[in-house]
Image 1 (cartoon, helix red, strand yellow):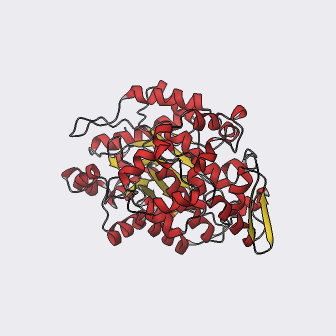
Image 2 (spheres, rainbow, N blue to C red):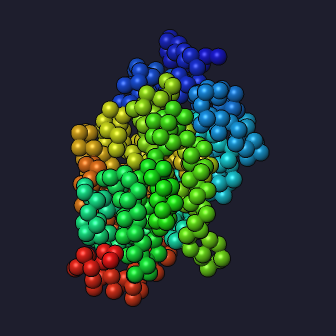
Image 3 (tube, helix red, strand yellow):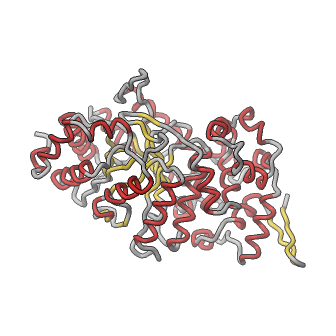
Length: 459
């Protein structure tokens, strides 16, 4: 079944739901590269009008990636909660947008509806929303997760401390960790991207963080962002693994290009849960959100695994994979893949807000790596703007990179000072457990020893 809309005396026709979603997407370079984007602004507007008139339940009857050949599609279809969807069944996409912006759509109601919303529904409604719409709706939704800290509470903004080093040098990493802790970053996770993906490096870096955590009684969780199979081997070797990381995407073939499957993620999740390393809070609840996922628009296209679907819809489908595992953290690394997919600061900003909105609407604890590569048409002013918009929208956490310049991954992100800026301007605070530690004696001891980071290395 095709879709159509007439503007003036020109009738625009869209061959399928996949085609309609792609043509309705605000402009971005990746969709043009894939050959799926609208050719003119008028065609895009026609697609947006046709999409707005589409009943939401149409998404339950037509898959953008075939059910028979894609396990992400099967996951979406087989786990859809019809009872949660029932209040929305009579809506069109346009009516859904209007309702989301109404006072009736409270945070509690949106949380209850999340299991009934498919990624394609979330992507569709985002395509007909302005930037302020994406912010207004996302700001209503709080998704709270726990391990040793509690992330996502109202009035809070956390930061991942990202102390990467091009040679995985322990002293250099320790110095960056100290820098971040002293500037109030790390309450989301201390997460290292290793230069060498092997069990020995992974275990050594985990032991470094864990030794520092125990010595100064720091309420943080650690993660070394090696491949998930490397982390599983580190668990078997007895390494102190807290959060388990993996990059994921919105199709089976794209996940296969990352060397993962849903079955492998299940196995890793079970292995991490068995460790029971999360803290027990005052209410007697153990922190058991152990997965950390990263995503980004364009990953499926870069793997030639996009099935002719636009990159933003595929990004939303990655969130279906994430929510299966009740993760601690999810973040879109929004400008990391490069200008072939998001060309400039305007496209990066729009994508970051779309991703945050769609993830929150689907019930995920969304953060964002507000970032760009050095060959993109973007600069740090663009990142300041997106950072501020995301903080207003209620993002759970951002990145904290020394000087905002990742010397290992060679891209530009946000710094420890950027986290301080947005907390101060908007009156936000760190996670409560971490905030208490910052005011205590253990933090003071750490500050006294910070001038000699080599003393903080494990023996």
